[in-house]
Image (cartoon, rainbow, N blue to C red; front, side, top):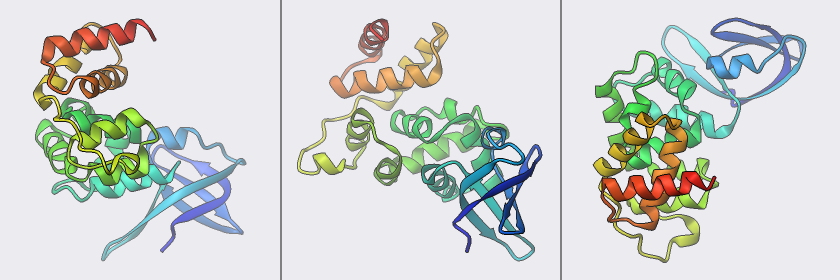
Length: 219
């Protein structure tokens, strides 16, 4: 199996790129965001996930190991294939996906093309139990690690501590939605609410909104 490619970009299309590695051209599928970074004639270094089916072998390229891990993890959810996983990673980078799962924000996942609310809800529900694994790969942020610890996992540095009870998922999602209605970027809103909920695990919607707005005003 191919897990990494390092070579020269030969061409880029809307869905794939050709990477020349010592005279062999590998066709690599990827998100539009990843493909936009590639320029013909320039060097490229990509993490690769090789998908083998009865009728094809396909390579999927990612800018980081964290993205490749998310791609694989998303496909463990029933009804989510490679196409849907790529669509989700187009609208949510690994940190954004981590945020969405940690607060049960299915609306953020449902922004992906072709991913409806039913599948989005299934993703955040099923992957919440795998959040510690996702955190270990993606999270370099202590605040996010604490949030996921409250979902049932423990960050390595906090393994001996008992995580606080998490604020109700519905309260977090409602607070994020309210901030979005006020014009805040969804990712920034999720991060602010996540930190507010970490500081006050039992906060209700109004308290989370107030705390998040206070933090946003100082950033």
